[in-house]
Image (cartoon, rainbow, N blue to C red; front, top):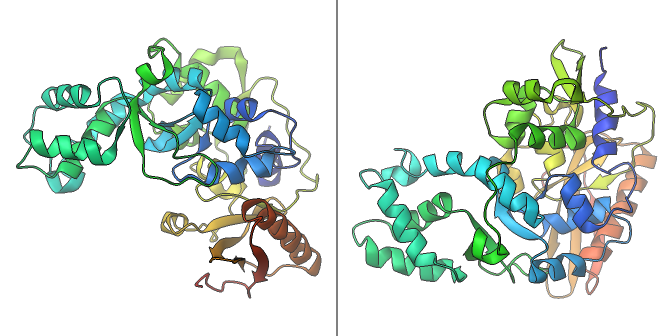
Length: 370
């Protein structure tokens, strides 16, 4: 069966809970989506506000404090907000690939080349031990142990080598303080679980992002062995083809969305996984409209209109005001413009309730400079 791009679009939006806000709890949403992109502190809150009805940001702050949610380096080597079970069972899949990074010639201009990886790891385990530690303190310890090396590079190496997570207060609502790191096991009081099958992780990916190709799966996870994982799923998956004839896999009982179902405007956080978890992003990013990742790094975020990327926005704040500036990537109808403006005002009211908010929609393809 061949699936049109529009079927793939609406199915992705449905499984991402972007067609209508869900009654899932925050923890259930994190579990369903296999974590939320949380490289920066704010995007998980925007992601949840866009997906969960009556979302209260205090839920995330409280969960980070009681350790029922954690911020940990997982898929694609980036920070994700996940439940503790996912932290301990996904990390063993990710760690081997992370640990290869620091001793390559391209890492910090070869800063770690020539050192024994196991010796470096041992020093890192001793430095971090069982109590959370700030990056500044870890860097200072690195400078003592390796006075002839860049202490920042040594610190980064430890953060790649050791299964670690960021502890609060960073990641709480309105808190972008510097990271404090802890090893996973002492923070959660549970060992890592290397027995969790990769096939099961891929099944969950398909449930939230499918139908998808094996290259899509690899783009999301940055792991190898996708074909073997799919083979192990057996009759738990079925296959389709896309408009270009490529094989797509899906969970056997996965529902496909009606391509004509209306898709409401959504303003997502920068680096939202809905945009970054497929090699072929045309199901949500029209050809020629893909934003460079360096734009996201500047806190530029996507606007979905009729289910597809159709603009970018950024929020500019000062002491008393907040401006949400939008740059369309195509011309919008009057109705689309009104819907975007309404959703933008709602997002501003959520993010900057104590400021006077304004929304500015520029001409198509205009920049987002202040």
